[in-house]
Image 1 (cartoon, helix red, strand yellow):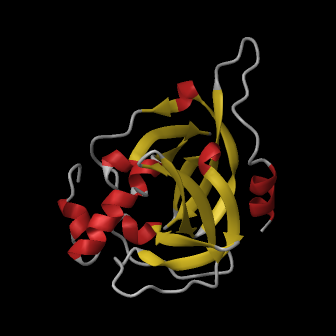
Image 2 (tube, one colour):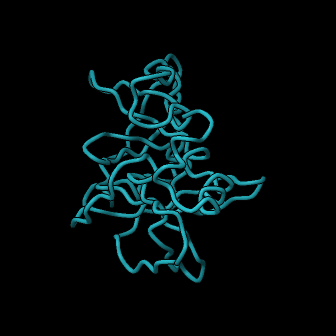
Length: 187
């Protein structure tokens, strides 16, 4: 829980640039299925404890349900299932990261279930590589880049594509997420 509090305190900070240093951006890192992922900190609204989800009938499998966040209904996406994997077991460290995305020129809040939040990291632009065109276990268009941190890679997600309201609605009309993800463009 300490990592969650530390991340929440630093949410308002932006990229730091001092004379002679390369531009850096901050990212919230989290674990999902044993892999490290990152989301730009400017997209993060809040991190909350997992719980109090209301399931909604006839939704794609990757929509775990909705939560009531200060009077607003916020959909909650299981990123593991969205990436074509199995639903992860809920543990004490499982939490919901509330992300602000842009959809049709409007801001929309979406919650994502993650195994655990790690920390907020600064990654220099020079340490971010292009997304691989093959080899990743998720769609390449979901990856904004690969951040190098201490000799390891962190997958930086393109949240506007991963959480595209239009695409998720289309999948809901087809009838589920399991097989349709592989048929989408960019798969």
